[in-house]
Length: 480
Image (cartoon, rainbow, N blue to C red; front, side):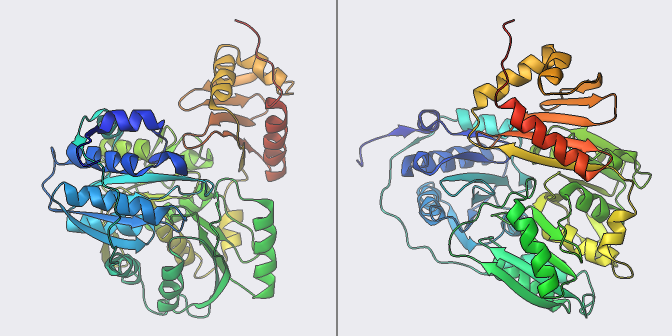
């Protein structure tokens, strides 16, 4: 085995793993020791051409497969002559923020919200998330390495968790949340050992809810009905003012108001950006249209779905604006510039974060209710859901059909009205004569087809999504 030499690009290609909208994702069995090492070697080889560093930081989520993957990656880091810093289970933004302050790259082992039989790897340069061009360079890098089977002993540092907590507790007075009763839906979130202490340090009374030993794939864009019901029960049972949760790696928030109603991620992002006095926003095309119509911002740029596209837009916005941010429909908030908050400088964090929008929402609701903040917005509602285990090839074929014959696809989906506008920025987004928006898009992370809808009532938006997803499964694509 010691004499065997592998080439990173071939190992990665043979694995079948590709980059999605957020990192490299695949089945657990695809992330063999050689594949993990190949990704680490390729990443470091690409990044060292642009940055000087002597160490690489690593962290994981709570998936059963994550510790072993981290061990293989740390073996690769050591083999390349770099120091390793292992932060154990922490939220992705905690790892990214700490590494950025130390001016070193980092690697997060996480599959985010996808099921536990899958996993993934996220890569960060010393200045933030890797770019789409970095992804291509990693896939194509031809770095030779020899496999190492024996896993190292991992010594965990608590520094990233401490730095991340300090980032936010330093912005507010210690009694900001005094009298607030906050529930934390912990499940298997990577940040579950951090959040209670963070909210308590700001004066809140905290109730921990449903911590699990098994990994729970929470998708903040498609909240399960069982989780909707749980939140309403918890809110009444514990007399809660607010419920906070995240996806698996803690970069997408899931928050509920005083009534236990979960907020849409883009509405949370809108309220956060308003409270922070952001000048210019970059948001994916799937976000609610009330954001771009809001008079609160000087500029709102629409991008493809995925944090790399949002981050890429920050550079263009920085030419004309100083307070820059972005967020996604899943709620992840990206801070594109340093911003002053309560007389303190909050440093830029150009990666999805769950804690900042939650705290800013609570700040905005100090003299009112969260429900009122939401109800005061224009009555425009979004809903989304997905079909799991839906072949990507079929999704692509449906979108190709809809792009060349959108009216025909719409009819096959059961709509008897005309299309006013078609947007193919990312997927197929159709604005109908009634004002309803129907948006189909394959997931970039898993074999899933997502449907987003926007309408003047939540009931209508939900009904559109349900109807489209039921009909699209049996759709027959006519020959060209």
